[in-house]
Image (cartoon, each protein chain N blue to C red):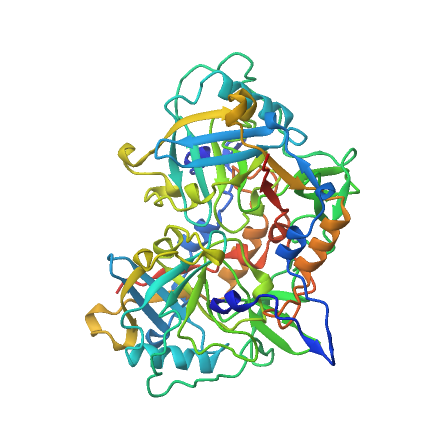
Length: 295
Length: 295
C-alpha cells in the first residue's frame, strides 16, 4: 500500500506509442466536466461545529425521510441542540450525538411521532443499477447521488447504511425517533440496520472528527462518565448561516456518463497497483464523489 | 440506537406462557458450549505494544500466506521492528506501520521476495458457505474461523479484506512485500484489495488503538511530519513472551452447530429492535466471534 505513492502516470510503452493511461477513480473525478455535478441545496446541509473546533457536514436526504429531515431542520432552527454532545462512540459501528435521555420539549414544527420512513416508493427514483449482487436486497444502485437498495417487485427503495451514513436513534418500535438523537456510521457498513431505522443523510466532510473520537467503554460504546462527552458548540442548517459563511458542496450526478465510467472502474480497477480487477463492487464501496464547491 | 440499551430480556407474553426469547448474536455467544471454540495457537498471536501503552493483538493466518507469515515471525524475532511506528492512517481505509522506506537489512530467515500469496487452493479448506450473494467472488463463507471468498470452478480461496484485516504493504507487482510494512483495515471492507495484496491475519483485540489515531493529512493518509508518527515499543510473537504474560484467545469453530446458528441470526435479526430481518448478510458483517481466554 506504501507503494501506492509510486503509482503515478507511469505510461506503459507498447512499441513506440504510449498506451492510454489506465485511469483510477480519482482520475475520473479530476477529468470530469462541470455537467457531471449537481450542487447540493444549501438547505440540505447540516453544519455541526464541535466545541473543539472540528466541523462535521451532513447532507440531508429529504427525498427519503421527509418528515424526519423536516424535524431535524426544526430542531436546529429551534436551538434544541444547545448543550448537545457526542455521548456514544462504538468501534466499527457508530458515533451518536444529541441530548441523551433529555426531557427538553420539542421546538415548534417538530412532529413527535413521525411515520416509519424506512423505505420509500421506488417509483419516482431514477436508479443507476450497481451491476453487482447485493447480500441485503434484490437490487442495489444509486439514485440522485445516494446509494440505495430496492425491490422492484415490491416497489420499495431505501438508503443503505454505509460508512458516513446518518440515521435516527429510536426506542423500540413503533417509536421511529424524532431526529433529536442522531448517529453516523464509523465502521463497516451495518446493512442489517437498513429498513429498520430511518436514514436521514450522510457525512460529506469531517467524518474523521467523529471516527477518531475515543471509544466508549460502556455497553454499546456509551461513554462511562459525562466528563467524556464531546461538546457540540452548534448545529445549524447552512441556509441559516450568513451568506459569506455558508459551505457549498456538489455531488456527482449518478445519471451522468461520468458516473457510469466511475462505477465501472470502481468495480474493475486495472491501474498499476491492481494486478487483478475484482469484476464487482459493493454498493457501499463505490463512494459517490462529493466535493467542496469553490466559488 | 440509543434505545438498544432498553432491549433486554423483555419476553413477549402470549396468553399465560412466555414466548421463547428471540436470541441475539451475543446471546448465541453467551450460551455457547466450550466445544464450539478453538484456541488460537500462541505462535500465531502477534502482540504489538505501542509506546503509549496501547496493545494491539493480531491473529496470523499461516494457512493462507505461509511465507509472509513466516517472514513476519522472523521479523519480530529478529527485532527488525525496533524503532517502528504507525506512519499512515487514512480515514475509512487503513492504519499502516513498520519502518517506512527503511534500508535496514532483513533478519535471518526472511525471504526477501515471497511468492504472491493472494489466493490458496480451495482444496483442503472446510468451508461453511455464507448463504448470501457476494459482489466480489462467486462464493463467500468461512474456513477455520476466517472469512473467505472462493471460486469453486477455478479452485481458489482467499481471505477477504474486512474491518480489522491485516495485510502486507508492497510496491508495484511483481513485488509482494516482505511483511515489514503492515496495515490494518479501519473502515468499510476494501474488498477491491482481495487477491491483489497478501492478507496475513486480523486484529482480534485493541483495534481501537489504531482506529482512533489522528488521520494523516498527506496523500493516502501519510503523516506529514515524523513528529506525528506513533511509536511502537515492541512487536512480539506471543510464544516468545514469558509464560505468565502470554495472552490467549479462542475463536468460534466455524464448522460448529453454534456458528451455524450464529450465522443464521446474523442474517435474520428478529430480536426486539429489528422489526424486519434482512434475510442476508455480508461476509464482513458476520464477524466470527473471538474472545479472550480466561485461564
